[in-house]
Length: 227
Ligand SMILES: Nc1ncnc2c(CN3C[C@H](CSc4cnccn4)[C@@H](O)C3)c[nH]c12
Image (cartoon, rainbow, N blue to C red; front, side, top):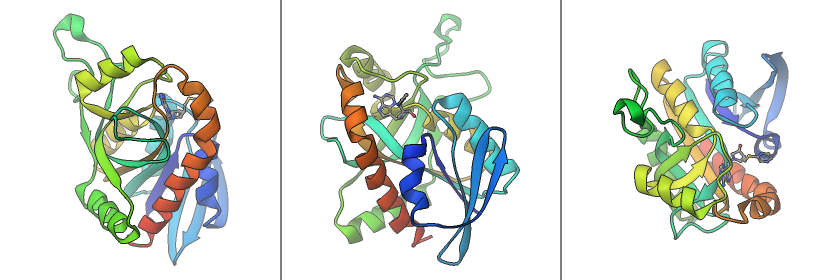
């Protein structure tokens, strides 16, 4: 079964509008929606903000609901110069920019017995690029870096870009990528840009969250039709 995960209610709501919701299951302070879409059952949820919350919900989706591919939809701060608000990006891999065990000689983002980067599923990414081609949409791909902080400083943004070669920044994908890697479940992450993660990003985020969430949701629905 396909799982669709978002961080915020605002990111999930536009997706639910396309779904025939059959059941709502409350578990571990989450609501899991069991929905039917084009003859297939799908489980959907929003985790709440941050890597810990996203890890909990992603793990429950896999362990309790038997999700065998996990698709994330939401918004992100743009890092690449060519990413404008409203543009779409998919992750080639994700990481945790706020993990720092460098005092022990490890590289930024590295945890022993784990890894810095969690690769996203190439087949799902290729499907997304095919859908984008049919729709005539530019779909960037690149590293998307996560940390438990809303980034609103050019200095922090440029550090994340330099160290992780990040194209976008958010707060959940590195954790969901880690869960999916450990569970052996294909992971796909789509984000629409809501801000540029520099000074003033909070104002842009508030202004563009709803619209960018809809952009990501609309594309995800087109992608679901090809799965
Ligand atoms: N610049 C940025 N840095 C880090 N993450 C992001 C994101 C992606 N999401 C949105 C949301 C911001 S925190 C939040 C949002 N609203 C209320 C409270 N917290 C969190 O789930 C991460 C978009 N722009 C980002």
